[in-house]
Length: 299
Image 1 (cartoon, one colour):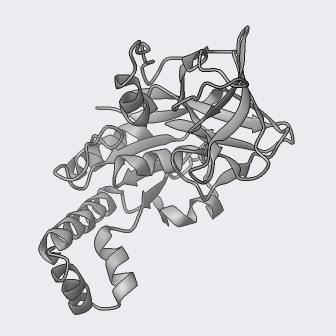
Image 2 (cartoon, rainbow, N blue to C red; image 1 turned 30 degrees about the vertical axis):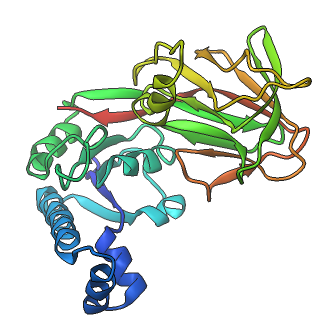
């Protein structure tokens, strides 16, 4: 039986130029809008053109006899990935985080279309390397890094999966009230919410929070089977404490949170508030390490 022809799925998102054009209708209107605010269209267009160039380079790198598909970020929740897909994320690092929860072990190649614009932590490869790396992926020769993901599950069965972190709190600027348990430690708290971060998330939001702590945690590495808990601005009162403001969750361990918010409690992952779980009074949330991991192609 002949081997299955590989399918390459290219994942992208709209550039700032695309978003501005969709909002204002024409390029002259975009230029006028930016000029009125002391900004130039030239830099926006330059970045947009680099993104288009990267997509063209990836397209040319795919052998003509391979299958191909292209998905924009808003379409990810409706797209059906196949088990053997070779996934190419062309864009900023956050695009890989947006994508990861929809995969089930498929290899991901991160292409950085503009090294002057994006850090490239999750999209480390230049467009010119796409052909070589796609060939290695198809032949099973690619160097792969597995990154830990975090999962959150409510007692009604709803769940979320994230690559960077899970946030639990109130959807507005009100205090979040809940009971928190980690191992043998338990505490009722009122805070600005909490995050549970992976080693990948430890380079972002969690790193900023940790840097402000008097006693910072030893943050996990992206491949470590560990998560870091941070409670944001816990408030001490006659009924709430501040002693359980951080800690590590190991493989098999669980962080448990019970909501004491009448309305507005939410849980979301990787900063995507639109894809959230409602967390009303009395609901129980369990957060832990997912057995599912992101398989990211390295050099």
